[in-house]
Image 1 (cartoon, rainbow, N blue to C red):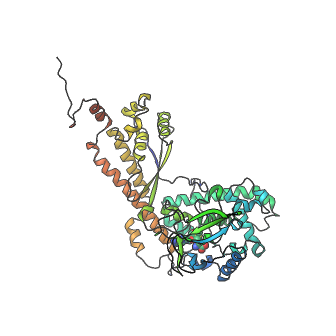
Image 2 (cartoon, rainbow, N blue to C red):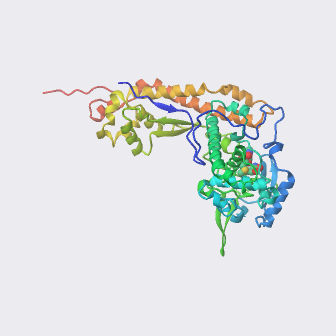
Image 3 (cartoon, helix red, strand yellow):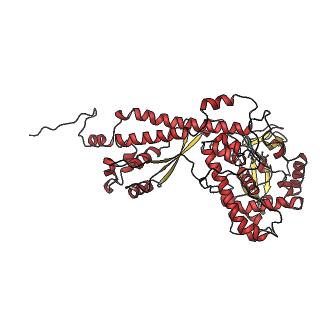
Length: 490
Ligand SMILES: C[S@@+](CC[C@H](N)C(=O)[O-])C[C@H]1O[C@@H](n2cnc3c(N)ncnc32)[C@H](O)[C@@H]1O
């Protein structure tokens, strides 16, 4: 009997904030913020168009003072290479609180609920409700009480959702491109629904037209500015605290911020941000955004990357096909081991394969003369058997399929790692191009690493010990050297 087909997808899984659907087409929106690649002069991070004017920053600072958010003024907003950032006004000790923002200044679902569009937004996903709120207030201009804050938000970031088609062509073949396209399609489809159901029927509340690009901007602001635990239902923008930039040299992410009561006798919540390291007066305060994010995640969410190879990952999606004759049995086994009929494995540069990946691959490929292992008497012990090679045919299949999938994924990139590295040595490269080259090179390195691991395994197939030999040994029928033990019959 032929071995079952092993489905191996080299596309990323859906992300959860907000749920990003998988891309179905490669049609791309012409996002705001498109800039030519290869311009001769290196630009500042946001470019002049994206950065707010200085007067907007001082208005924002005054506004915060009026709202009681800057009593101590240990840090001040300032122009830094990352756009705006928080700069120390004196030496600040490690773990010292640098910013405290009362809940009355956050923009969260409660802010939307008490606004003029609160009734319309009841029941909407938090990010959609907040996006509508942001866009409506933005359109009100100086008439909005939130104007000083909205006025310092950048018009774009280097997130791949804001890249032009030309810029996106530099990440051709990458998982980052599929996630970006998926994110944009998701935002576009949510916009189409909300436009028809909320915006157009309530034109009196949305006097200025809201386009899908405006909606994408709001999505990008939330994605890049909401602190990692303030997402989903707890989504919130925290003005001033959201000016903190990321620094990869800070490797502790916890304890940089917390939400607490304002004082013993007050019920009001405050967002309290601490510096994880000592900062000298005049220097910028940084935090670590998220240790778990890959470079592709960082590029999509924030528009930058980290030099460390552990940020380079590639997600393999493995699937037990519904057409597999043993689908039900395999699903049952996968589920009893905390997996499902689709499993995602993030492979990281320089790190071993995720421990569950090989057993899962062997399960997916199980068939032919190994299919007896799927019988119910093996049910409780099967996963243990899958942790070791099952049979030569099974092991050979997984090596071949994974190698083929890697080769096919690698053929989708339009440059080699060597070409990328050479390009990176050039001067005055566009920031988005640098992100593109770094991410695509990182993905390819991981794919080569996976391919090499399975090529090495394939060359060792003859020396591996398979289920039948282990079984005979357990029964005492085969010696340690593989010699068959005979009994003398009387
Ligand atoms: C939470 S905001 C920080 C404030 C932001 N710099 C601004 O001007 O409003 C996150 C954004 O800041 C920028 N940023 C933060 N850390 C960065 C870094 N290490 N390198 C480049 N850009 C960074 C990115 O544009 C990111 O999307």
